[in-house]
Image 1 (cartoon, helix red, strand yellow):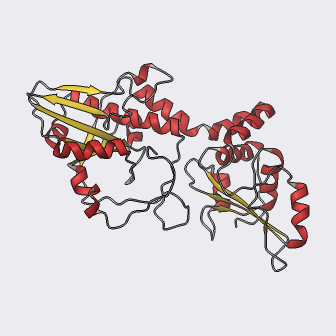
Image 2 (image 1 turned 90 degrees about the horizontal axis):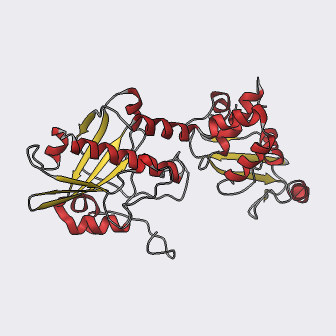
Image 3 (image 1 turned 60 degrees about the vertical axis):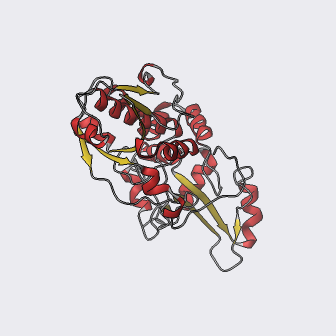
Length: 341
């Protein structure tokens, strides 16, 4: 099905599809396989619109041109496009005409990596009109979600479902998109992920201030205690260009009561997710704080928009349970780079 000619019943369908593909993190690669006799023709036709790994010369055994788009995820993908990419090769679009159109006219490139979303956006902005509005409709789908969530959480009735914690956590790689490798591909930009994280932190802060009994029990806190809560990112709702103030702290919240101090790191997801990322500072703090460090996983933040309970998992002594070297069966490391990455 994916190789058949794409027929858009309206221009809106086409530009909604382009808006989806232009979003950061959606396209993994756009490849070009070309017969030897057509390589020079390809290079002339697409001058400045491909990176050195393409065109891939397939000799004389295959058809002249074969273009493919490998896609990381389909969240927010318009139904009209989805039908063309969910075929034998899941998350792959094979349609020479459409891919040529994307490269010729809308700033996409043949490259083994992400597209230049900003460049594509600028080209669409110059086109303007309804086409640009239809493009933005799908390009900004996550930004609209974050905006709605931020607005909702300015004043809301927090509902929490505390979920039993799993017994293991595995380290995963993030360098491939092949099926079965356990790779995490976020559907959000870095800025959107920051906002999602702060909203999750806000939920835990609110639960502590409101003395949610289930959460206090997991944290070994007494609702009658006069504890003090410090949330490093308190106030993010009031500033558009807020910068993360938990950086270097090793945690997102600190709770002081009597002679005890606990540290809480919050990891948040739009839906249910088993994946999270830890920084060096967080792991060091986690190790040093021992049983007074808690990892809190907040899932299904989207439920806030429906006034439904979010799911919360609370892990006591997470370093001891998950991250001690002797508890890690395998791990993947990269040589080079910076220690702070």
